[in-house]
Length: 296
Image 1 (cartoon, rainbow, N blue to C red):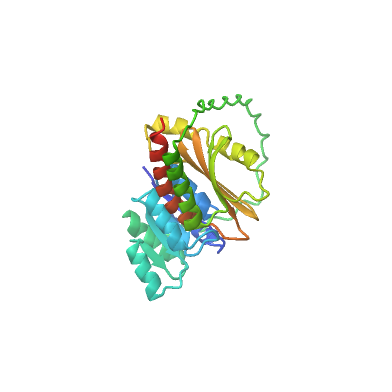
Image 2 (cartoon, one colour; image 1 turned 90 degrees about the horizontal axis):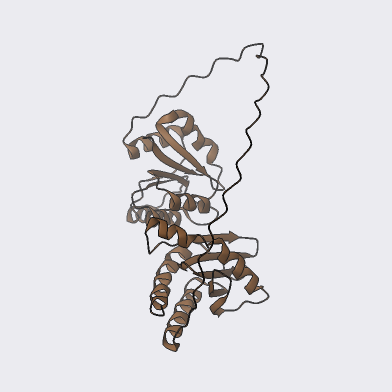
């Protein structure tokens, strides 16, 4: 079975040089390209990779922060950062994170050597250039008509929304957890909603945001997370949905199969970082689950 390698492009333009690895290694490795750090984290959440290659600085977060989240999602995945200006502090941070390699400059041969070392494979020799094309191209054959596509199966229906009746003591525990998120990572608003879009509890300021409509749209996007948790038989399954715009960053996390945590960041006040949001929110979701479990 081919080893799986994920290449992250980022804004530094490493994709063309890293794509040379695909041709160099041929079918011995299964390469997947991700356009950004956020897209790469979604890929890793969905399935494990043996190796991840990424720039040392991504648009959404620092490379070290990206590596930390990758290791939290998939501890067995090896991470290599390229294009770093290596300082003693950065080297110390890489050693603390157990980063597999930190490369100061991007070289096709150097990256290939690191890939071989990480995966325990011999580095293939560069392929000779292809022969020149013939002078006369063959006459193209007309394309075959594609068979009609089968209609897509309807999405699974969302489970019924239970009534949530918090005692005053548990309600205060949930509010403390939401306030902790607002103070720790700085969202403008943190709120619990049902997958039907009903607001249960909120901390922060909505401003001029249409919260009821926004909550219903974002919660519906995670309606299938409960079904995934049941299929995987994983009670601690944590779904995440992220929307990023020029003014706002919106995050939605599954707390229970029918309750969602929404975070709204105003970029004019504070920039959200996916790594920090993930690390802090994962802990708070456990506290919220414990509080809501006692109400059932």
